[in-house]
Structures are given as structure tokens and as C-alpha cells.
Length: 62
Length: 161
Image 1 (cartoon, one colour):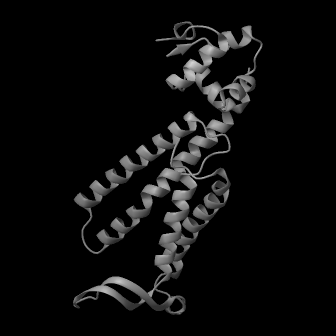
Image 2 (tube, rainbow over the protein chains, first blue to last red):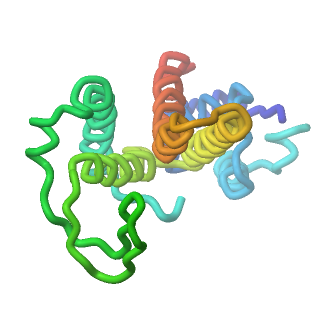
Image 3 (spheres, each protein chain N blue to C red):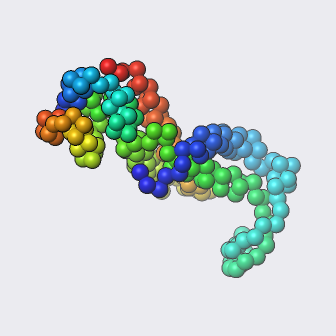
């Protein structure tokens, strides 16, 4: 699953650590998601879309 | 992420577990069958079931004389192994939980793979030693795989952009 987290993060000038802190996960987990090593749970994916104010399909694609 | 112990048990149990694994190996190689060492740890212990070689099976609470050292070592290995593997990380999240589950799954597959090979290819008295070793192999493999995965996970910290 591909994602545009890095793009949305840079639009909002947010570091991986900032995002990790807001989502209550570790920075390494954000790094793993961005690099496609790990697909987040539905709950985490929805939290990201809320944070970036976008739709799930904008952030993730198969 | 349920059924996990607090983070404060993690480091203590991890150090204790790997120390006991090393000590267990030293015991197996150098101290097993050492009469002086065995007599130090031989005393009467309570038992629920006892069966001597060529003797009757005795069921019920009783006192038996046994070399208690290997039992104590086994109990500590299991307790600290479980505590180490199932304690939370400092920043426990769903990815770490996935790594824990993956490690447990792989250790189960490997352990039962070895068990199948043991059942089909090992005969004689050494068979019992293989079966006994596999009681601890699953928890050792689980902890080793999980700790390697955690090490690689924390190492990925250098990739921030």
C-alpha cells in the first residue's frame, strides 16, 4: 500500500517526531509506514486523515 | 496490546533471562553430573505425582528427595522469558505489537519444525534431551527474534526527513 504521508507532512511543516507525538506512536513507526514497511491499522489511518484534514483515499492507495 | 506487563519489568527480566540462558548452557556443559554441585541442591521437596524407575506411580501430596537446581533454573527461565517478551516497550505501539506477534509466530513454526524432525529422526535416550530442549527453545527463539526486530526498528531512527 502506497501513501502520501511524507507529502502531507511537509505541507504542514511537520517532522516525523511531531506526527508520532500527535498520533501517540513511536517515530520509527511513522518512518516504517512512510517507507511502506508497515501498513497502519484502520484506527491509526483514520487518525492521520483527521490530522491532515483529508480523505483516506487521498492519503493511501493500493 | 493487551496482556502486557509494564515497561518497568522489561530490562530487568531481559537481562535476567539472557543471563539464565548462558548460565543454563554452562550448567549443561560443565556442571551436570558433578556430584559435589548436585549434593548442594539435593533436598526434600513437595510433589504431587512421583514415579521412580521400576517403582509404582504415587499420586497425592508427598515429599520426595530431588536435585532441585534444574527445576529452579527451568522455572526462572520460563518466568523471565515470558516477562521479557511480554513487557511493554517504552513507546509501545501497534507496530511493535505486530513485531511481537510475528516473532511469536516464527518461533512457533521453527520449534514445531524441529519437533517434527525430532519425532521422525531422533531415537534412543537422546530423544528425551531433544524434547526437553524444545520446552525452552520456543521462548528463547521468541525473545531472540523479537529483540533482533526491535534492534533493527530502533536503528531506523537515522532516516528522519
